Length: 179
Image 1: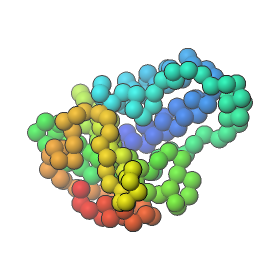
Image 2: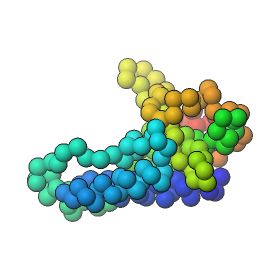
Image 3: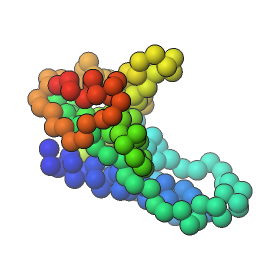
Image 4: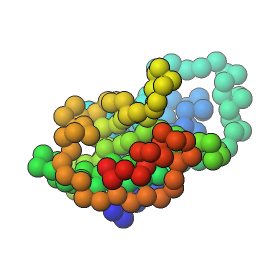
């Protein structure tokens, strides 16, 4: 699992570099960050999900207000699960917070990234979001990525490593499940 943890640390640091670059009026630099991130960290069907190109620029005031803001903090990895299956081999599920978790309130599930190996590189392949549009009970909502990769099709459960217990009840319930 150490390879996956290292992959996630690098990718999440680069994600906050992107967030910082997004607040700058340099489209060429932003485009290079997006291209590099997507090429190195995402499967074809998952490109432009975590980081994406800007379609237009904001008014100058936007950049003036954001230029001195500090760089965000990377997501926190709360839980990492390992599965193995016939189609993708090893699949890892990284349960994370949002970017810039500022306090304990933000220590709750936000995303579950499915990570697979493409050639000799680990890549993000799918995402699920934790939430509930009806405000009843948070649950996993399927997001973009490889369509055939789902919680039901990833293969056999191998192990889970837990890092930080979330604070909200819905996240806690899912956190302690071996999945």
